Length: 406
Image (cartoon, rainbow, N blue to C red; front, side, top):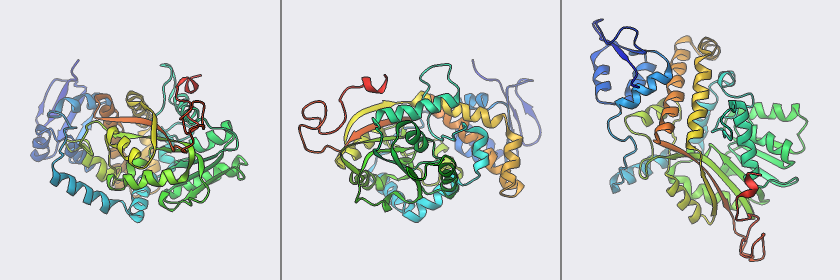
């Protein structure tokens, strides 16, 4: 059922039904023209910059936004010139220094701000709702365990978490599977938080968290298993081959890598159209780039990794994002106060408005299929036909799925 919308024009006139679920108030006519053109990202920017006021539930607002988008926002633009420009931009945006700055821009906003709407473990990636009645916290624990089962983690194995966030997977793998765990991040806040967790749980001998770029990791001692969760979106298309080649060198022959990340809904687009990708790049994830899963699989194969399992969790991420959005919407005053403790009041309001639209808008995007989420398990074949449960496996992977769901 369509959501009722009212519009307040720059001169003060109101158009639309009384008691409308969503009201859009425009300060100038240019914003109204932008909306008429279906440039949702530009309208979002106008909201962040206070040129447009939005009233109503985020869920209702996104139902309206989805109807305003002209055509498909994931149409491909694969001309040779577009590809050259995109690759040049990708190279420029993903030096080690740039990546560190971009990660800190997003993740170091405020730990207390994220804690308001994430689960208690602060798992900032797609949850796994293995049963419909799960809470967000339960679904995040289910996701952590799903990853550990997919990787067949065993006590004493060397496990690497590339982009370990606030340590949810790192700690879960160490505490529940007995691995020797190493995590890396470029976020100073996350690094400090996880090291406090490690000390508080007395895990200094088995778990370590480093403030380090993946390109700097020592390759002398390989890891038995590697996870990369919500990280490769920051790598950049131009660096994707080098990224997976590095992962292969870090992985022991016969070992497993699980790459969990957002993928593009279209085959040739690196971001969502109608200005939505530009908005996220400006206010939320500078330097973020998305690849279609087919492109990801190609880059992994070129690096010498063999894909053995791929799972699409797209609707799980829609539900996760709505849970985050609802959690933030329920605590807006607290969120504003937390942000205001780290920046001026005007800046706090801008950040809060940006995150409100980002969380709800991404939830809508995953529901619509404009973006997706894939978990890809791959091996580094060891070349020995006798390795593994079946002749020719050349890895520990059993080449059947039942072990994941026992």
